[in-house]
Image 1: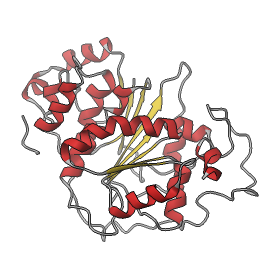
Image 2 (image 1 turned 90 degrees about the vertical axis):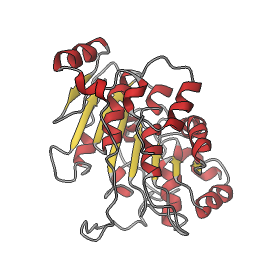
Image 3 (image 1 turned 180 degrees about the vertical axis):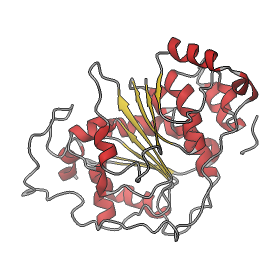
Length: 304
């Protein structure tokens, strides 16, 4: 085992006025009732030389994974219908112990009675633990959530402690409050194990308790876009410490009109998860929004 060791927001958080369960909007909102979310946020210009350095690669390849030949890896990927596109993609982990998670994380996973990693976990964990950008396409469910939460715990525990006025270290964005609440339920057990603080912010609920959570400091913030932008605009939180970002069901956020340039940029690495569709998913809009940060080889892609 490795040693590393409100109501006015309700409609907007369900789609900025767009259909709740998808549907491409044909024209932008007029903004007469709610305004344009994010219009008060100035575009951040990052000076990479001035940003503090931090560690983001915690992956230690297990000896069993290292011994897997290319043919064995290809056979496993075909059996799990995993398609990987990118450069220098790490091998999948075939068993939980191969991920080299800390013992506390393994204890939480063991209590959930899983027999083996799902496809998105097997291939996604090495990416996330290595600090690599990733786009994943997988069926929705707890398996997808667990592909980014345990690595987030590892990442958080290797960062400096939060200080007064700091925002979250890990930010998980989801299109609806229902999904955000589901992720919070999965997240709770891992946070309890490490005495980490998390909060879930979404429209249709009083802002007061959510603001108090943010002001006290949370390592993990699970949020819907509009409520997050609202709090950023009124300076109730900030993303200065955010170095682990997840866009869960990002295709739905695009369908609903959310444009990530309002809040994104300058993060450690980005994991983008799409709901699996029978039709081809167009994830190129996220490339156009600059998530590659100018390097065409920086974004590793996983399609499941």
